[in-house]
Image (cartoon, rainbow, N blue to C red; front, top):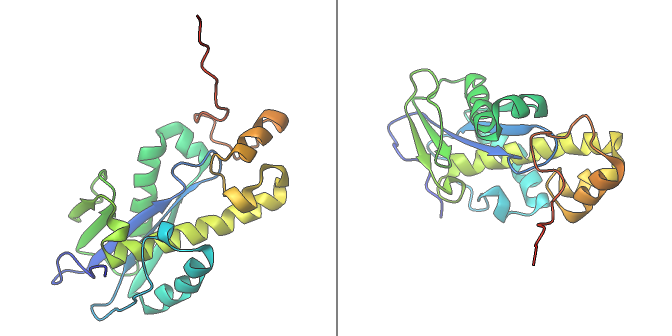
Length: 199
C-alpha cells in the first residue's frame, strides 16, 4: 500500500516525469495535490500498470485531486539543456501551473533544482512509494502517450503508436532506413553503433 504523504500537516504535490529515455518527442511531467482522505488501491507506479489501467485512473485522479497540472519540455529544448535539466524543468512547469500553491514537493528520483522557495524531497522510486507521485506518473505518462499518438499520425513509419518514442529495435531500424524526423532528439544516440573489435 502506497503512502499518502510524507508530511501530513503540509500541502504536498507529487511530481514525476515521462519520456526521459525516448529518442523522439517531448518530456512530460505532472504535479498532483491529493486530498488527505484520498484512497485508491489500484493506483501504483505507472510502469506497473497496463495502458488500460492508466487511462482508467486518469479521470479519477483528475476528479479527486485538489489540483493537478502538466508541464512539457519539447525535443529542441531537451537538445539545448540536456534531458536531466529538461525533466526537472518540466516538473517545475507543472508545479508553476498548479491552482493551489504546495508547501512541499515530493519528487520522483534523486535530482531536482529548487522551485522558488518551496522545499522538496527527492525519493528514488517514489512512484512506487507515495500516492501523489504515483498519480503524477499516471498523468505524465498518459498525456505524453496521447501526444505521441498524434505524432504517429504524421510519421507512421516509426511505430510511435506502440513504442511512444522509446528506443525499440523497430524504431531504430526506421531511423536507419528513413532518417530522423523533426521530432527526434538529435543529441541522443539514435542508431546503436556496433563496437569494432580488432583482433
